[in-house]
Length: 435
Image (cartoon, rainbow, N blue to C red; front, side, top):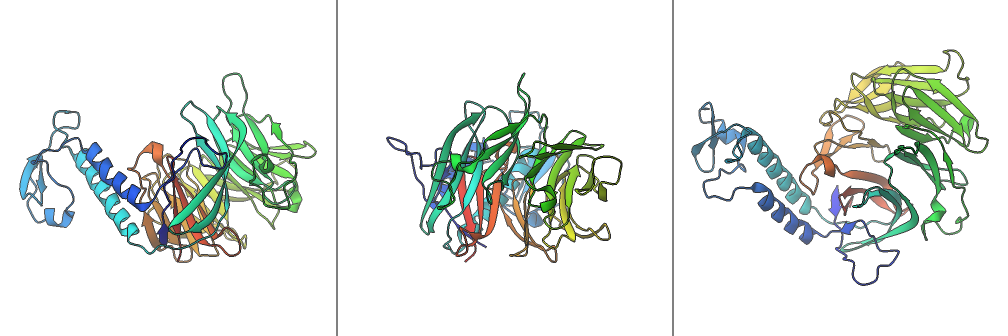
């Protein structure tokens, strides 16, 4: 996989509605300068006697270890380790570990920069952006004329603004494919949570030509929704599901009819099957179960399949043949399940997660699985043999506040597009594409 970096564009004078107000588009020179600046700011110690951590651990292992001391292979001398609470000398085991991780991240970024650049096409993405005054703002990104070295991004805004946290979001196909965006908003103060269908046509010039028509804007009072999913299954036409605390709520947008299914745990992840009349759900308890959409919510016959992880399930993805399901959890486990035998047939090693709500990205056309870890590394595995193909470091130093968000398309921009990965970190957007 090769990377195509963004051309820097700064806002000057009057801002156009098409210019991106939230993302800064970065080129490789800007990134190199920013990477060089960040370690200097974060180091906190510029003395000549400060030990270097850039050398490998193999060289350090050839010398005897002394309790309470750290041997620097480059300076060929020992340095005393002090307790972590001592602020006078930052040389602690934790600071050494952080510097080693930062050194590894910068080294991997340098390797990425050496990759050959590639062209790609355009696509459409819905974004939820945190703003400085608090709250979130929505937009749709059109990626157009992605030709190296000049890359352009157009952000299409609307007037909607919320100061409530967005728990979950997905595309909804009410009037036509991807005609709406389904958002699950948390409650705030005396305002209850809700699920909102936002027409994509509200975003200026964002809709594909020829099908730009007025859409239905509606909101459903659904407090405390953790997850949502839109159904393309004929057994649940015009329906969406929300995962709540200890129940699943199935809502018909046109008729307003609702079905409630009681569960024993919070439902954190959901996906409808396309051919089979099933809705799969992943729970905080580690249970994964399917709801048979042909059955009512009375009795116990609606639970069709049950699988179990040892930790909270954060993502479920059904493969195209609908015979296998991929799931990840808060223990960093990613498992491929055979739905016929209800057995785990493959595990994907290397993912890092202890508490975060992180999605999976499965792309069968390219035969890959992608996930961003809590350590801010994006990992790509072979879907067929679970081999770790690539590890992409974040352009930012790792932190809880800057875990990257990624989106992948096998045809970025349509039938003539090339496979590509978009990574958003802070206000920066990066593109990684195949040559």
